[in-house]
Image (cartoon, rainbow, N blue to C red; front, top):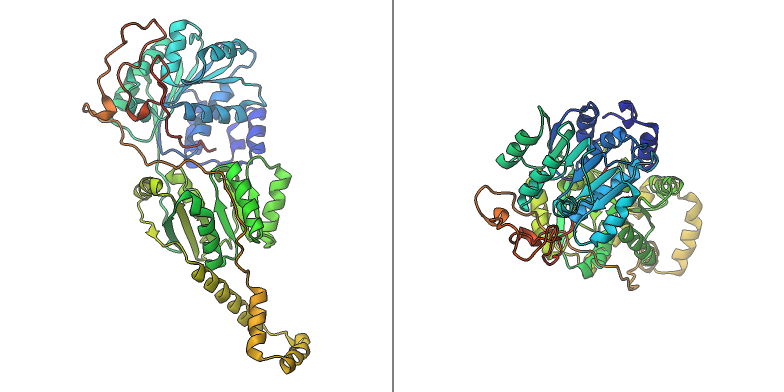
Length: 499
C-alpha cells in the first residue's frame, strides 16, 4: 500500500490526514487518487466501507482554490444521512486548507440553508431533491463547478432520482471532471455514464474475502437490552488473553468501557475524540497487557496490529462487509488462532446474512452462554494458570508457607480458596447503555422493470409552485429525500464513511 505522502498533495491536506491518524491508503484510494488528480473522468465500483469517500474527497480538495468564493465542487448523495457523513469527512480533510463545505438535504429548513450559502462554500454536498429546489429558487448556481461526484449512484437510481440527476448534470459546465461511484453496475448506471462522462477510467475494487481458517467466526442473536450481560458471559467463559470489542459510536465505546470497568474488567476505550497522546497511552497499555480489553470504534481501530489478540467481539454489528473483514482480521494474526463473535439483534439478522453473501462465507450461530458456563469457563482458565505455574517451577520461596498452611488446613479447602481468590467472581452491578438503532438489511437494487424500485414518476402535483413540488409519486423505502412538499419520512441510517 502507498502512503498519502506519495501523491504530492497540498501540505494542509496531508497534515489533516496525519492528524486523523492515517498513513497507508486502502486499495480504492491507491487506485483512484492518482487518476482523479490527473483530472480525467472515472467510474469507481466498490462496496461501501472501502474508503471511497477519502478517495474522491482528497483529489477534490486538492483542486479547490480557496481564494475564490465560487462553488467549485458538487457531491451528490442519495440520502441526507450520507450527505452529512460525507460533509463531515470533507470538513476534517479540508479544514486546514481553509476549504468551506455545506451539506444541502431535505428535512432541514431551506431558509437556514439559504442563509448558510451566504458564507460562500467551495463545496456543496447535496441530495438530489433538495438541490433541485435550490436550483429552481436560484439560490444555488452551478456555473463554476469543476468537479462533480455521484456517490452511491445505484442507490440514487434505486430511489428514483434519475431525472433529478440528469437535470443537475445538465446545469453544470460541460468542461468538468465527473467521478461516479457505485457498488453495482446495472445498465442504467452505464447509460448515465455514457451520457455524462467523457472517456472515463474504470476502477473496480472487490472486497477482501475472509480466508482465515485460523479464525472461528460466530454470531449470537440477542436483544439490545441483553447484549451487555451476554458479552460479559462470553468474556468470562472464554477468558481471552487480549480482546477487542467493537462499538458503532464514540458514545457506545465510552459507555461500554466504563460499564466493563464497573464489572471488574481491565478495559479502556479508543475513539477519534481522544488526543494522539491518549491513544498512544491506551495502545501501550493494551500491548503490554495492562488492560485485557480494548473497546474501539472502526476508525480508531484501523491500523491496530497486535499479534496476540485472541478474541474479537462485535458488540454492534458493522454496517458494511468491509468493516466486518477489517474487525475480524484483528485476531488470528501471526499464525495464531482467534475467535470472533458478533452480537446481533433479531432485526439485524438480514444484515448479517448480507455480510455473509458479500464476503462469501458462513458465520456459525452460537447460543447465549449460561451463568454456569461463564463460571465454569473462569474456573477452567484459573486451573490452567495454576497448572502452568506449577510446571514453570521456581516455587521454592513459597513452599515453606505452603507447608505451614497444609499443616493447619485441609488440602482440598486450601486449593478451593486459592481458586476462589484467582477467579473473577460474578459481578451483577447494574449497567445501562444508551440503545443504538439496529442496522437494517440491504435493500434490493435498482430493477429495470416497473417494480417498487422504479415506480412511475407522475410529475408535479397540481397546486404546487416551482420549488414546492410534491414528490411525483411515492419513493420507495420512505424516500430519504422527500423535501419538496411531501411529508418527511425517516430514512434508515446509512453506512458511515470511512477513511
